[in-house]
Amino acid sequence: MFTKLFTAGISGIDGTIITIECSTVKRMPLFEIVGLPDTAVKESKDRIRSAIRSNGYDFPDGEVIINMAPADRKKEGSGYDMPICVALLQASGFIPENGFNEKSLFLGELSLGGAFRPVRGVLPRVIAARSAGITDIYVPSENAAEASVVDGITVYPAENLKKLVEHLRGNMQITPAERKPFNGGVSGGNPGIFDFSDVLGQEFAKRAIEVAVSGGHNILLIGPPGSGKSMLAKRISTILPDMTFEEALETTKIYSVAGLLSSDSGIIIQRPFRAPHHTMSSVSLAGGGTFPKPGEISLSHNGVLFLDELPEFNKNVTETLRQPLEDGNITISRASGRYVFPSRFMLVCAMNPCKCGYYGSHKKQCTCSDSERKKYLSKISGPLLDRIDIQLEVPIIDYKEINSSVPSESSADIKKRVVAAREFMKHRCEETDREYGDSVNPHLLYKNADMTPAQIRRYCKMSDEADALLEAAYEKLQLSIRGHDRILRVARTIADMAGCKIIEKEHIAEAIHFRTLDRPYW
Image (tube, rainbow, N blue to C red; front, side, top):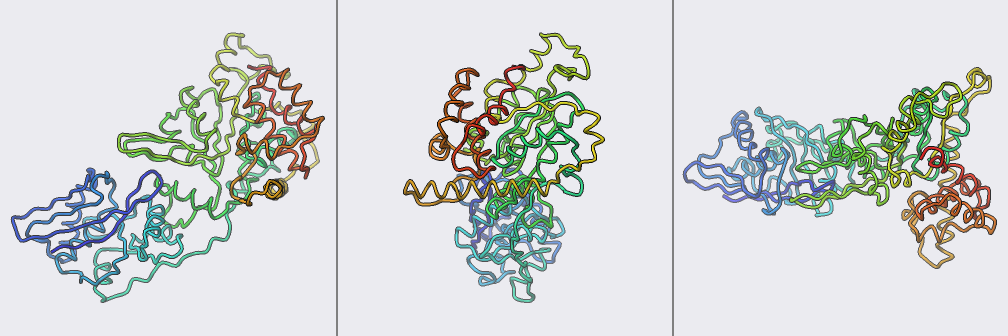
């Protein structure tokens, strides 16, 4: 007998539809799976045989051939257990031919006793299924919340093989999973634990961070130990704007493929804040593997990647940041194909000015030699530094600031200004596009840090005084073209925060002030 049904695989962070074909013939006993299965798929034969017999069904005595189409694409993972088992039981007559809708998709791993176990990457597979016209999806109960995020799909949470077969035979009904509406994402972090009101003093650093978040700019904090660099960085996530549904969906896809979603997670609503240790490898940062999976830069997508003690990271590791920072994605090439992972994140770095940490400090004498300082700072390349828009010193605060009775501003108050600046940017871009006669696309530009050279020319209009100041800075500081553009992007953000459509001289001056660290140190 011949049966056919659908399942789905993963390619990068996207789902691909896989057709399962099952043929049973009364010949010498044989159970074979073809279609480029990996070891996990091949081992499903033993899991399926045990699950079928454990639940009281007869395993076919003849020849069983399972084909996974398209046959030229590698299949990996244990998520094909459920569709192969259902196809086999239907071919054996335990499930009627009309037992399920022809536009149904099955996905899940089997235990030896017949219980279904969750698999990773369910969300992108469900999205691909909807695009292919699939209407019903059967997944393990632990994956139901994740699968039900997608509108227009009926999700059936399957607890075990016995209940699934009885449902398909019409003897009982599996209640479809309830779809929870998206009520708006929230920024990362926990205000009860982290809040800018905890940070005493450091008003200049707070201002720079507010500018960085308002425009999505990368930022480097440099200063002696105990100055509050890490404390400031860990509170950045509390002032990020809330996520849109599109951002939340894309972030959830990445975490689903990486296997980092909990069983009760429907959709990620908090912006990611990733802080990997400096001993990490290039693959951990960029992603990769035999079957490439997202790295830290993709797990930080739509959020923050915090690299504490930046010079302690291997230089080969930090250099992998250059292309993703410029393009907003990371491309990984393997013999099996080319995989593109999104990586549009805000990079936040913190470091000491030297090995002992006290170079330039007025509180404590530096014990490093000139050669030691140069060696320490040389771990950060010029091209990487050039991609960090805002670079500022964070000094140790005075005793009076520690004991000041003036309360520090809360994250909630700062976040309101950040959101207002983003809204001003959005409306300004729409007005400018109308002036150029273009159709308005509010999703084309998320933040000023993403502006292309063409968009810089369109949106960054300066007054004559501002233009003259930037020209003088370009010559005196020997800026690269990238450095010139990044000053303009930061100045555009500062102008947006002030509600100005034209970049004025004071906006350029502040942007330059945020980008001169490489002079005394590098």
